[in-house]
Length: 300
Image (cartoon, rainbow, N blue to C red; front, side, top):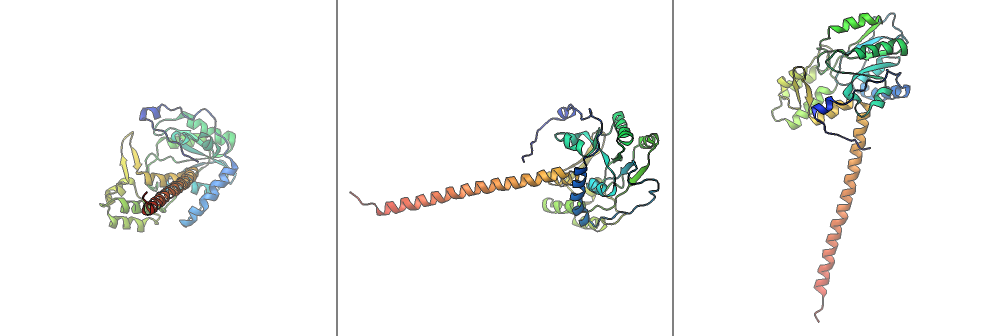
């Protein structure tokens, strides 16, 4: 399957229609089971464990608002093993581009970043009261590699009080393999990379108290694979290899497309190599034949 890409300017992207015309839907049970199954092997590699506490009054069938910190792009994998009942997921509108049907099918609710969103509040209320599903959201107003150093917006408390539903905090610790992946990439591509600082981060990555922001990583290791801008329109950006790795953690669909595209390109490469080899062999045989004929030609 070929992945289609399209180049647009910033203004053109901002002008794209928003996926906001439908009410939330109950996530597809088959897709929920598939996500949980695919996540199991990855979480097993990281020695993933769950510690539950203070969950009185919140049963497996009790709709609740789940607040979760970012954990190195393993968020949905962790959530699939923690939340037992069907749940909707708050996701940014850019994730819906080109795959809105799939995003809706797994229960995603679109929202805009860094701006008031009344429609989102209505969608959350609809999911809790009408669909009787839980809602998972990542409410931090900032970003870090593991999400444990981010701040929460002031409006979050007001929204929680208004809904009057149980609130469950999912706090994930540990940077898993992200730090090691970043360090290996920098070692291969960055001659000024600081391996000593990297080793320090890698040893601390498994500790619950470990936190690492993009800015700290860049300043400490002289990293070039990731760069971060502050301000209203700022953000954290990554080199293509790293972006693909992060996107693979975020989206099972993207990972599958990436594997399929790689296999398609390798097959195409083999076809081209086969054709080229036959062509070169024909050229060699032609020269051998013509040289043989020249050496045995009789003069008349």
